[in-house]
Image (cartoon, rainbow, N blue to C red; front, side, top):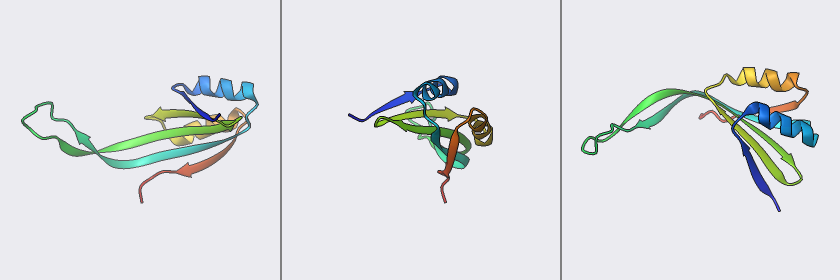
Length: 99
């Protein structure tokens, strides 16, 4: 049965993937400005939209019908990519930026 295993730490995710013998992974990256709803904190005053810089990398790998996923917020995707390549992974990069 297929499942999803989610990691919060890149080092932990990489350790598990290496132990499983995974060599190929995908990295989806977001690096752009996006609108986000900001709560005013006051129930009588509606919230507003603010434009924030989003930098996020999602590492995805498959092994025995399980999806291994690691989502890392507030990082530079190029740095994560360089680390993954240095650890010996073949990385397929995908952009999830809004067009």
